[in-house]
Length: 434
Image (cartoon, rainbow, N blue to C red; front, side, top):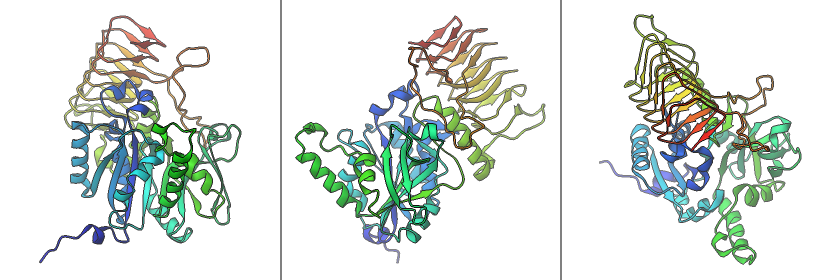
């Protein structure tokens, strides 16, 4: 007779995963795209950003449950996403909503009972705004072999000297891989090894977080409403450096970048499409004869319900969403075209995100400035700069059309950000259209 496993039986000796998804307070950099959909659910290479993290977790059978921690209000989109992920991957997925933004570690401490339910031996932690082919299997093996299953592990990536100061920097002992020094966004160069936003912790981490929590509540200089907030990087990683308890696993292959703003979505789309071509090539469009389908260049994913004229040219690095119509002679390159958009005859879309329900008239041109890393520097990463430079001018970036934007025929929109439901009858360049 089949007997349902208790939670203690299910998780005993197993692992869990925690994904930190933030909340609306960190979404502004992703606007106008996050006005319609939370950033963690934004489609990258055709699936929500969070799904890439979840799929990576399923590669390690020891992970029996995934917990998402954030400050987003429950919504129909989020509920449907959790249900779809559970059905697709067959793994337990739960959302734990913070009562207020608790920082990068406050939520982990607040929900410690949920994380430790069933007595797992440890748990992964991921930042949701990281784009990576997460080496969870390799990190787990490293944790067992090098850290002896007791220490904590941080995933490290290589960065060039000029960009390393934009991240958490790690100084390691090359013989033992112990972290000797950790500084979050230092003013001067410390190390080329940077925090890649993934960790393995054991239950012992809650002792460390408890000390930080108690110190916050004893510190009268911290406002009372902020005393439950804990910074994972500054309050935990920095003090652990040099104690022999924190180790770094450096990525040996693959890619890594952050998805901090809407412009970085195009670069992340390229990286995940390349990963999809290796792991799920059946999901990508294939080149057909000119009589059967459009011209496909490189990695392109087209939703089955999209209608693309056979004389159109797509790619490289393009995602076309559900219900999209692309007319004769259209050209789409390095772009994300979201659901129900219409790109009419001979229109051109380059280095851009075309929002839901947008309409691009005939012979229109929507083009952004490519934000690729320096191709001559293998350690360079995509920059997450602010919208404006020191002179107050718009930095060169991809063009973003919010939901329901209409671009009239024979009009150009270059290096611009357009808020939802705008009707563009003129040409625009280097502007934010409110």
